[in-house]
Length: 363
Length: 252
Image (cartoon, rainbow over all chains, first blue to last red):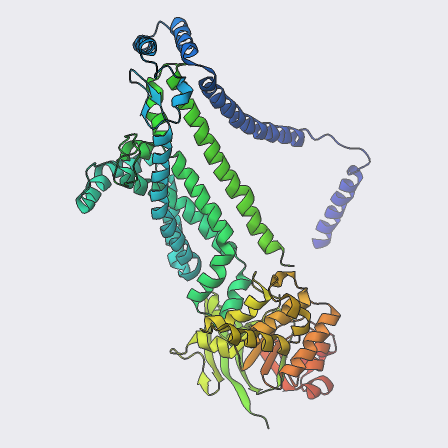
């Protein structure tokens, strides 16, 4: 029985041997096809990102070119080509008054782009001003509040699960926090709007119910899973030999965590925080629902703010196509794009490389 | 004959349900070099790590029996593991200096013990590096990264780092297995020097190294201590057949 099997196997092997020859390259269609498909998809996704980028910039570009008259003329042009729409009528009226104003009052005869750095954001007034400073500073304020809330919590949580928690506890905590990343931001926003705003108001007793503080904390909730997960990864990536060396020298767990593992993971933790900033910076729904959306410049964390992304979210639907306001919104979009892109690039290329170099220099 | 530093009574260790060490009894003499030899997977490294409770870091390890150091069972409930590891230092197979300067590596131990005066630290660092026979090579670059040193220097730096916390016992887990012959001989000389002051336990795969450096040798096989005796006796006239086969290279 056994020998029979052996014989038949030998036979098979022999016949296989005869077939396999490598003197000529064989065309394998399925391999070729799969490779091409994957390649096409990869390049397509890159192309889509680049095209979006180009589109956003193109739409934002006119703001730098047009002076007052040109702006009006483009608006008129738009009115002509899209005149059928009901909504187009109203803004045309405002542009008329604009023209009137510029004739009467000298100071308003400035280019729309020159109001970009003014301190007021009043895009639909008779005398529109597109100052993005309050939006930018508001975003910055919310981001800082959010980060001050989210970064310490998530980093400490990561330290706990990576270094102190028993495996069974880690297996519960880690997925639960990561689950929070999949939470729709509108749900967090709703919770902030209905619950957190009221609770915080009763605690701190501030005037406006929705403000930078409430929004910041809510956006922090959205950023925690990102910062936590990446920090945890950075901490567990620290070679085990470091931990062993430290414990072997009679350091306690706490000393090992804070004097050995944490310093070694610092670049990774920075990357985590930077990506968290990117998330907060671009967060729209929570900002829209919980920050109060008042474009004002103030240092008080309990004042309402309007963030860059929330502005786009709130106003893009009602803007006239091709209008100055429209271009400014796209300019804001480009700004957000550039910021998040820069932050992600910084995290990805600089900090990650720093981590890799650090461990590889060890022969 | 000699003073006993470590006494092991009926030590059994399980990884989950797998027994890795079975009923080990031995007495390790003070200020001597004791070598553990045996084929890979025989439990000698695991055994070494039970002596400073390094196995605590691994989940699912169950240890029965006693390890008595200076009259105290280190598996007693109220033993302070942190201080135990200060008394029982460890050198690992792969040199593992921190990504810090040479100075900070050696000063790490004293610093976590609360020594912060600069001149005191300087003194300890210099003394430890001299003891580890690396002072002359690094004295000019104490503040360079420890990772810029060669592999052999890194390992001696790790020894200096361990010496800086002033242990009684030094455990070495194949300290020279990743090093070239010259660095290896330096480490061996160093072991010879250090045994004046410290009790040294070394795990090695290298039979000649065990013969050259140790006073006592223990042969492990499949989690059991097969034979333990003076090194001369072990290598010239082993009592067990298995030991003889292993030492003469017939298996393992």
